[in-house]
Length: 86
Length: 514
Image 1 (cartoon, rainbow over the protein chains, first blue to last red):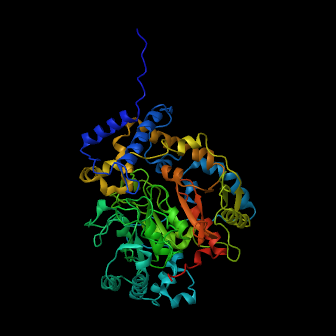
Image 2: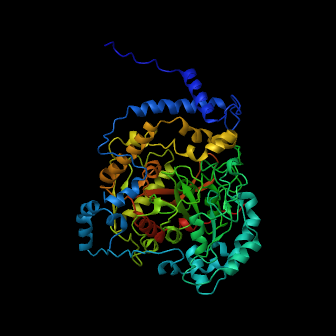
Image 3: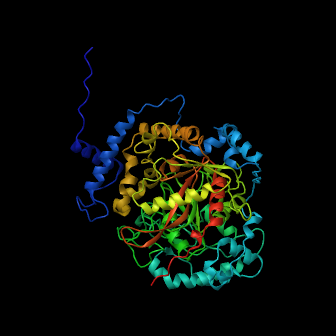
């Protein structure tokens, strides 16, 4: 079998395209924000930078190894302690 | 009987037996914490009414503490309508400067409500107490705007459970307190970065922040525009303003106070937190609010609320001490603050605790394995939570979210894989905090709130002194942050009560505006 070739790492432009498509799919229009205006409460440039960091963090988290037999997903950890006495 | 943090975990109990037994052997009292199982409108523990009223407070009713007020009202020496008039007078004189409130009932409405309040009855312990809920608590008679254009003009048709409980106990909502945009940052003009609420300690200087996001509640309580209030905390939003305003506040164990009727931010990290001027007042309000709510399943199935008021009552007579033998751990970087004065205040605070015969100081606790990885982004965050509640608002106009927009859009980019792993990491962190941190101590003095917000563990803040702030030169209060294991609120109250029995920082009143 041929060796699997890792896909190339997406650059900022690739991610911006993905982000725009994702929001458009959901009916969310971010074009109403100014493109770049540091004085505005929010602009597209800052929004996209934050969104790219979230996507890259997503890839980082995917590599986090945690034993699923001992660490089940736990939305409310503190009350769990009362129920289990642990 | 022991405080609840020990009762809920047999393993911790066994681990602690050696030390508590030795303390008892030298005469240490281990008084009971009587459990209270109460329904809405039921009584508050009798200890709440035992305050001796300082005579000078009768000259200005807004200076009375909640406990003093309750004592005077029950004995017939003070009428709820007099309290209303005193607070409304002060609000009308000064809130144009403080900007602590976003919406207020009229004086006439409040006087009508106060006149209808049962006085001195067992079901209305808060009779006439003028309270300031943050503006993310639904109120059927006042707008609830969440500090944001997203909810501008929103009028709920019911009260949040927490508001309903306060009202059922005789409390009055004297106003809705301004807050950071959708529970983030300091209060600002909606949709802008222009600050509104001022810190009560610097009413003439808008530069010094009241912190957020419970900015208005903190400022109102410190400035004597309310006797107490309730904020919410997802990431430091009660403890931050509490310390910025020199208040005593608790962020309880997750689920202890209902979130029904609160504009959500994160359904896994949001907490309601009582804010007041001293530990006893916080405990009184907490006692009223700590009830299971069928409308919020997160509050169900927890151990019954114990007697927080007793825990917050000074203990030990002329030589006050913490009610239970308590190991107080010190965070590893506790003295790394750049400001030397803050370090000195912390040193003085710990030195005073060391004088307390019930306290054992544990310097430099070691942190659980992988602490940094488990408590910082991305594993320690909750980026995905807010989006689901707000999709229709996001479709309507993203500009309404202003500076908070990324926080509310991120959930549409975060994968289910990440969401599950964040929750796994929380569980792992909780387990390690119990077995690798709270095996060393019962209470820990910490410098940040994030790990405790994420795992739902209780936090408390209180003032320990004053400091001249470096940017503005203003004299402002400084506080500590204490954390405990799940359901360790009594322990936190006991430490705060012992400290406040021998200090006056919590009594110092901020200056009025010029």
